[in-house]
Image 1: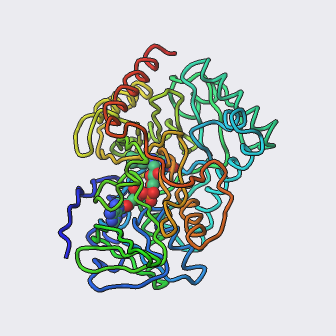
Image 2: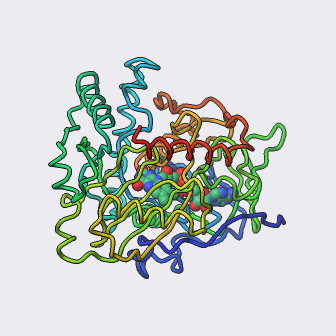
Image 3: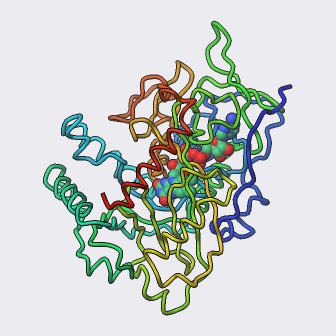
Length: 444
Ligand SMILES: Cc1cc2nc3c(=O)[nH]c(=O)nc-3n(C[C@H](O)[C@H](O)[C@H](O)COP(=O)(O)OP(=O)(O)OC[C@H]3O[C@@H](n4cnc5c(N)ncnc54)[C@H](O)[C@@H]3O)c2cc1C
């Protein structure tokens, strides 16, 4: 029996957890509880976030036996903590992708980005997750300088002319001010193919649907080792209580790949970046009617980007915090200050919830999905935009595990490629973040 060298922490007390109430509470767990007896399946999945559960959903649809193992409750990772912004983009722009890799690749990437949103819609329908309250509100990118506005307008025009995508509209300074209630922006670009969701309800809903279809989801079950025996096909996953034999394993542990040494190779593929969120108390009626009247998701153009949305009558505000660790207070006060800077009306409004988690950044700013070896598929690195993308990529990871060759364009990774100088990633992240903050402060 292996002793579990697991580094984990309690589930944060987020607004999502509060809204899920008793039925979605982590004290009333979804899934079959810890693994206590040996299992044999075709495909084992490590990680019960969007990636792992969507992989399991695709496998179940194809009649393939599978089991999901997670060190924590369902949705403990980023999937239960995020901002709930469902978007159809990657971090690099489509025009930059075309310049570097050609128009055909940009078209394929564009299709993948929009397929992500379609995947979320289809899963909500198939799994009957009305509680996730998905709304296709569109997402408004708000420009903080004229230069930033010119850049996002040029991208919208390029996408329209070169990819035939008419889902983006330019909004004037007045229109953005009227809609957001903030004078902090000079204009913006609205992407229609995007929306908002209750992220924890979404991940719990997929898990409940899988459990109802007989897919075992074993929580509180850290995978401690992935063993391969010479000359024997498949893998054996070792947990504290039992083992799982499988022909294939899908590793879907993303920014939490450091919980045990079993997923060390995936850990080295990523730079984890802390991302924090605050939610205010419920807004008084006058502010409720004034701020973000269209109830979309909103992002801004600063390098150390902030995003915001409304939910439950509250204002939610999020941003990256390269300087703090999970569980620390740093960053929350800076977020509140940034929020009040953009929305001075909120100066006297109390912050009621604050929480954080890790996003998995990659060197090329794109998700990575592929085979580590003949029995191991991995899907990681959503760079902070994984609600739609992890849902899609989880399904593609399942296809890879079954020997299919889905079109993954630039997301396809032939083998793992550790981040160079991985040991220096923490100081490196801090250095880059400090430089970005300096440039943002200078309005560059
Ligand atoms: C604060 C925050 C805000 C965000 N906002 C947005 C947003 O608005 N829109 C958006 O698109 N994206 C957003 N993201 C990113 C998005 O949440 C992630 O990209 C996505 O949830 C990744 O899902 P996943 O299933 O790959 O990983 P996760 O949900 O992180 O799941 C990984 C799971 O693996 C488990 N695990 C790890 N190691 C082991 C092991 N050895 N054995 C068993 N289990 C293991 C963990 O317990 C965890 O549950 C945000 C992220 C954060 C942290």
